[in-house]
Image 1: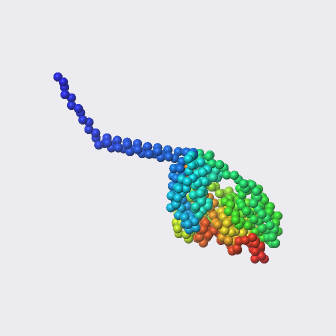
Image 2: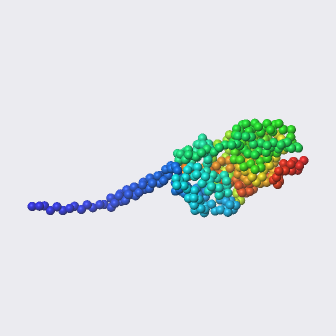
Length: 391
């Protein structure tokens, strides 16, 4: 006689379903993380999607860290942040069937960044990248950057000549410094010092920095200021920044020290309230009394005097080792270091100033520049006019 078997029903406890749900959620999370990591794998050539993802990153960086958005709107008539869709269309127009080469990506992002008021914001070139590597690359994903910059060409260096033009005026020596080149600083310093020593009988020294926009603080200090009698003075430069700065360069060998304080704790305030800074950076430059002595030193400046040339003008005005003559400069002299940010999908590095310079009267140095001690119209006869005025 056959036996009747009753099928047993298994009951699952609620805890079982909870475990299964947690397991599935964990699996989904891991798959998402894997997919995200795959999105940021190195690619060459670069797909358009990577360029647009890094544009999103770039726009956020500019909004969070760049101080001169008010000037960009005021003088370039452009709301950079709201122009994202236009920039994405630009990327699409630059795309090819094979995507973007590393150099094409550099050129495209630099074209976008050229819309900013501050022309010192750019993609780091290969030469500068190699210098950054020597000093420990200040970005999070060094591997990605290294792979990208292997496929970018080095910039050619053309400045292997001396940049001085010398004239002997009645009652003064005139030296035009066209640019601060990147050749042998020791050799350039020796040339400049010999010019000064050979003409030490002159009463007045005129150094012409008009139209000089070189970005080379070492040249400004080691070649120019170290060879002028600067009277053991200390020059101070102040920057206001949005994000807490990381000083990437060791500037101690140039006699420069730095400190960072909360902006709310500083006595110096910027008049442009649209900037809303959080930190104040103070660079101090110790000048040594080891240069060639002239009775009077004058520095000529104009609206195109910028970067490290403006550094000299600021230092002269702050310490009095020379009288500055001419027009307001274009500023930027106090930005002795930069902030660096990695674009995670392309591996390119963006550099921008640490902050905006603040003049002693609270105005923005990038906006109004460095005012001269003696106001004088620009022109070919400025040096003659100056000498005639002081006779």
